[in-house]
Every structure is written in structure tokens, then in C-alpha cells.
Amino acid sequence: MVKRSLSQFSPSKFIFLSIFFTIVIGTFLLSLPISRTQPVDLLDLFFTATSATCVTGLFAIPMSSFTTFGHSVILGLIQVGGLGLITLTLFVLYLFVNVGLATQLMAGKLLDMESWTSVKRLLYFIIGFTLFCELSGALILFSTFKQLYPTSYAWFLSFFYSISSFCSAGMPLLADNMEVYQSNYTILSVMTSLMFLGGLGFVTLFEIKGYIWAKLKKTRHVFSLHSKINLSMTAITISICALLICFLEWGNAFAGMNPFLKIITILFHTLSFRSTGWATVPIIDLQRASIFLMMVSTFIGASPGSTGSGIKMTTLAIYLATIKASIFGKAHVNIKGRKIEREQVNQVFSIVSLSIIWIILCTFALLITETSWHLFQMLFEVVSAFATLGISLSSHALSPFGKILIIITMIIGRIGSLTLVWALRAMTLRRKAGIVEAQYPVERVILS
Image 1 (cartoon, rainbow, N blue to C red):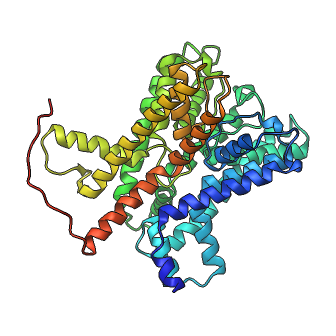
Image 2 (cartoon, rainbow, N blue to C red):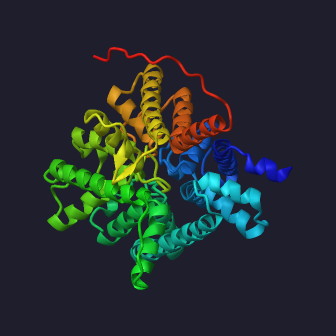
């Protein structure tokens, strides 16, 4: 009976409940006197726990409101939210529970893989690669932080910034974000590398490892269509964004830097604007075109199966390929010599459309309640919350209703796309199981 219930579980409900209970536990821990340096409203604690779990980085209160224990709780929420509650849960199940057919089916549903052996290897890779990157980043960052802070605090800062970068959280412990380190080559290089690796996607990283191993053994290795699309779209979007930032800010916000530092800073912000939210210069110093570019970049987001959010690279690729097929009158959507299933095309348009609709509705509602905010500030705040960027353009505090709406937006932005895809897939499976869909007469309508 237990096996039957496990094999028929709902991934979308599992993810939502896991994140919700993690946020509740985080809120409880942050409410303890040992976590706070001053009294904090319960809603603000819930907001902070949600922001950390959804690796957003938006704050209703400053980080100085929490003690070192509170900061440790926030760091734990970032690690759990960034690495993925699903990955951690399945990893613990595999280590401590007898892996039967029910667990194998659950893993296959969660990670969209048919082979439990592949899932097992991927899970070990995710845990091992994450620990390796975060530990390596912390060790290198410590070489700089130890010159500025006491040893124990330097270690804590090193791990906090390393984990926050790899998990695309962008939550700074220091009040001035990253501005104090804008000319530190070591910190910029390490955090840029961590943001890139964390946002590339574990499945693609797993295949890259297989490719390197195959090269060493002089055997043939073929990338999946997913990784081919992901790598090419990542290269294209990063290149375009970097060139535009270079054009807009080379003689503006980055004017006082030497050419080599400008290049590193451009790469740093290009990757940060995808989902992390670090900034080495005040956001208000950037041109409005750069801020708009930031909104577009973070809405697109990082890669599937990564620590970042947004609609994801493969979604953008299929969306553009569908538009191309429509313009050229093609019957099917093709990418790199492969036809994309109609079900996935529908999912992509649902994800993009519902994301835009939610952002519009949320912005409209907040404009009614937050009268001190300008339209552009409010739109940016909503996109930043939805895509878990964590940057705010306004110093105005949100109303209680505004905080609740931003909390909902952060959760939807973090798990909404996955939940939608699995819900659509469940409906497809039910149709295939024997539920016949009604067929209606075909008729065309005027579009223009």
C-alpha cells in the first residue's frame, strides 16, 4: 500500500509542500531569540525565510537584524533551496532507505529520467560537485577575507559568499553588497566562476564530465539534445548580454576601472544578472537600458536543473524555434536536427504566457497598494522576485499585503514552471490511460 502511494505521488505537491515546510521551519528558527539582535515582525521573518529558501535575496529587514546563528540558519536555507529539496530528499532515501520499485518510480518522475541507475549516479554527482565547488570557492575566498576580518568570521564569510554565489542567492552579509570588493580580482573571479557553474545545470555538467572521461579513454561521447541546446543558448545569451553591458556601461558605471577590471566586472554582472543579484556598483548608477536588460536577462534565467530560476534556457530555445517554425510555415518545431514534441511546445508557451500574466497581475495589484512606488520600480521588484534575482530599485518599504504578494511570487517563480510542466504531463498521461478527449469541428478565425 505504501509502495503504491509512493509510485503515484504528485511531484508538484511534493515540491510545494517541501518548500513550504522548509520556509515554516526556517521562520521558526529565525524567530528564536538566539537568531535575532532585535525584535522582528513575524511576517518579516517569514519573508526572509522565503527569500532564502527560494534563493532570491530580497529583504524586508537588514541582515544586521540577525545574529551569527540567524545568519547560519539563512545559509542553511540557501543551501537547501539552491541544491534542491528533491535532490537532498532522494539522496537521503538512497543512503538510508531500501530502494525499492516505488522509490525508483518516484526518482524517475522527479528528475524526468527512466533509469534509476542514471538517477543514482546523477544524485551522487550533484552532491559531490556542489560540495567540491563550494569548498574550493570558500578556501580561495578565505585567502582574501582573512586579511580583513578575524579568522573565525573570515571562514564564515567565505562559506556564506561561496554558497550564496553557487546557489544563485546573492544574499550579502555586508551592508554594501559587493561594492567594497569591486577591484578585488580574486573575489570577482571566484564568484563569477561559482555563478557560472551553479547556473549551468547539473545534467549538463554531468554530461560534460562524461565527455571529458570519454576523451581520456579515447571513446565516443554524444551529448543529449538537452545539453546541446543548453550549452549553445547559454553561450549566446551570455555573449549578447556581455556585449550590451560593455556598450552601455564601459564609459558609464565602469568608467573609473582599468580595461582588464572592466572585462572581469562585465562578466561578473552578466552572470549575476541571470539569477544571482550581486552588484559591485550601485544599481542606480547603471543606465536605464542596463536595468531593463537586467530584467530581460533574469526573466530568461539560468539553465534547467540548475540553482538559478527564470523560464530557463531550453524554454527560450523552444519558444524561439516555435516562432521561427510559424514564420516559415513549418509543420513541426525542429532544433538541431530533432523534432520537438507538440506536448513540450504547449508546455513552453504555457510557462512563458503564465509567467508574463502573473507578473502583469502582480504589478497591477502592487501599484494599487504601494502608492509610493513608481511603475518601473514596481515592475522590476516583481520580476526580481519572480526570477529570484533579489535586487530592489526602491528604498520604500512594502505594505503587509505587498510583502505577502512578493512572498507568493518568490515561491511561484521558484517552483511554478516545474509544477506546471508536471501538471500538464499528468493530464497527458491520464488521456493516454483511456480518458478520451472530446473532438470538435475545425474552424479558423481572423488573427489580424
